Structures are given as structure tokens and as C-alpha cells.
Image 1 (tube, rainbow, N blue to C red):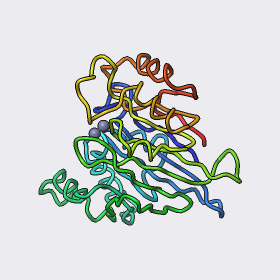
Image 2 (cartoon, rainbow, N blue to C red; image 1 turned 30 degrees about the horizontal axis):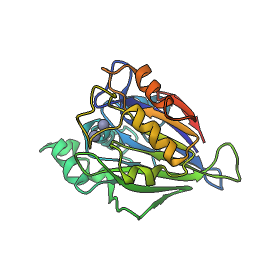
Image 3 (cartoon, protein in one colour; image 1 turned 30 degrees about the vertical axis):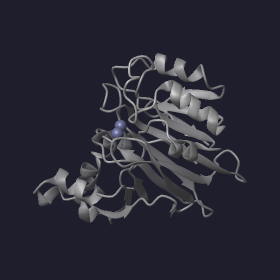
Image 4 (tube, helix red, strand yellow; image 1 turned 180 degrees about the vertical axis):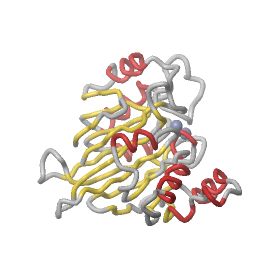
Length: 262
Ligand SMILES: [Zn+2]
Ligand SMILES: [Zn+2]
């Protein structure tokens, strides 16, 4: 299994990155590569074409219905519907309750960009993992102002064919039991760290800081932490320092195009 960062800017695209989107790929026993998108925030359709293939998706998994995680679903449906070779079949789309209505509101009354026919919608149900080829996707409810999920992805290792590995993606969340359950024993925690210690302490229930992400990684016993969703107005070095002060494992900042092999 490998994780490619498509977009990692927090809350809005930055000058250098689209908003949240991650491509997870793995091969099945027959050697076919499976492609799963975790989130598709504003601007992420661009890097999806650069680092992946917008026409070769087996599933799209949306953590929550904020624009910086889901807005490019609408334009992905345009690309797949109007491509000169003919429309592609609908792709499985996993998301919170209300995903269909949210997409319809984005399209407003324009039937030309109506995304409903381009996706087969499935609602996340906690405790009900879904299988996509060799990958198992399990949603964990997390703490954010709207219904939000972290996603735990389990599948074959790229490094050791005899091993099954787990990637835990926080989505957007503050510290909560769901985050700890999601991350527990994973091989890599991909965690948001949108807030800064000292600056955002008064706001709880929305985002993690680098320190809170590092503490979650330490509690979960994960060996590797990738910090993401850092807004353009933060200094990433500050976020990194917060995490490394409380977590002894390997820590990296997400950057567009980076590939993390599990
Ligand atoms: Zn966000
Ligand atoms: Zn959010």
C-alpha cells in the first residue's frame, strides 16, 4: 500500500498546495492496482491528474462535508461525465449522511453539473468497514463541528508481501476517543494539525495542534506520523516542533506529490 499526498493545505488551498486529498493505491493478488481517494478538497482535481488518474478510481472516501475536503467532487464528475471518449461508469462514493444533498446544492439547478449520476453513494456507518479490492476502509466518528469521520485503511504492504499494513487518516478532528481508536496500532498516522499551541487554545472540538497529533501518535503506538492540513498562515516548522517534542517516532510534514510507502 502506498499513500500519495495530492493536497495538504489546511482549510483552503495555499499558493503551493490544493486542499486535503490523498491517493491510496495497492495491488491485489492478481497484480491489478486499486485506487482509492481519501477526500477531494478545493483544487485537488489538478494534482490528482498529475500524480494519479482521475479516470481510474475505484472509490472515493470523504471524511466530512467541508469544502476543503469535498468541493472538487463536483468537477470530478464533470471530468468523468464529459470526457471525449464517453462517460465513465459511476464510482463508489463513501461519505457522511447528507452527501447526496450537499452535492446537489453545489450543482444548484444546473443539470449539466449534476453529480448524482456519476457516483454510487454509500453512507458511512461506524463499525461497518467496506472492502475496495485488497483494501478495507473503516470509518471512525471523530470530533469536528459537522459529522466527520477518520478512515482506517488496511491492505497489503508494498514493503513486505507477507504483511498487512494499516494507514489511519484523521480527517478533521480534535482529540477524542474516535481518533485514538482509529490510530491504535496503525503503521502510519496521517493526522491533521491545523492549530497552534498558544494561539488556538481557546477553541476546542475543531482541530488538532502538532502537539495533540504527536500525543495521539504516541498513545496509539504508531511508528510513523505524517502531519497535514496546515493552513498557509501557519509556520510548518512550528507544527513539526510541537509534534517531535512529544512523539519519538518518525515525523514528516505532508507535501504535494510525496509518496509514503507502507
Ligand atoms: Zn479541513
Ligand atoms: Zn473540516
